[in-house]
Length: 336
Image 1: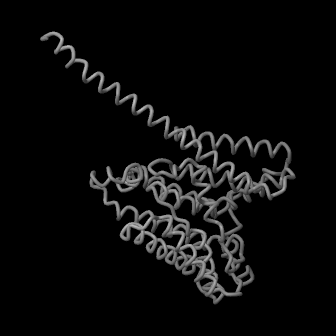
Image 2: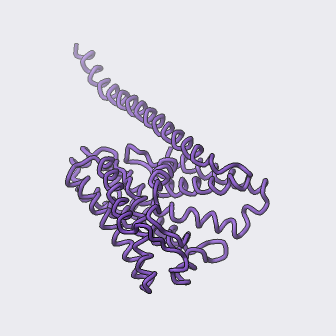
Image 3: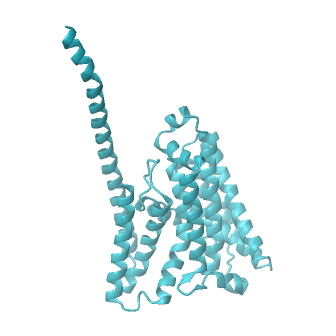
């Protein structure tokens, strides 16, 4: 079912882009493809981290605030003549710190993830507002090489997209081939069963949040390179787009299933819709409504799939019990 879900998202994406190209012949030009990938790259990074957290049956609503404050942190270093590598490392380090805070409160403090990350969302946003104030960082304050990374690429493939793809492949490989990665799925499927199987639940949840914070910090640094403009409102509301991309991409909000590839497809689908609507002459005010419809549809599919799987498992268990009891019943009839 998971593979079919990802295939369906890919098919919808291809059909949507092909139909738009037929209506607007310049939509899938070299620059058009590059713009699509540039718009999706940052969301793919954050959605990858969010997917790992959601797989453990948790959520991180603070990613938008983390992206905003880390973007300004990177810009603050760069506008003073700082090294671009140092700026990116500072943004990632700050993201790790916030991820560590969320992870400790959820795993050690046993506070519900929704409550923790909603609280840190507002705390980080408040700190950001106090620190940034009315200041604003623009492209003129940044080194040309840094801004260039956010726009340049190899033919139609931007460097930002290549970096996002590399991170996606590494995280996917970890989840699929490492025991600790598989334990994240076990934890999300059933925390109690995972505990009985010896899964270090607190350590795995903490790891998921730290990874999510690190990728949100990296996305913040790349957001600065891509758009070249950061203020105290940067990243506001972005967490809702990220959650939508993850759920639409087939990562069940109840945990234990889904993949980062699906989350990336969901991110690409949502960002493509933002580009498709203006290209066919539809007002961009419909974007949020369409995103909401897709989110509701994804949740409905998840629920129907869960009910179907539960029914199949019940029938299979009943058939197993029947086969197990049948020989015993036959022996009683022979000797009775």
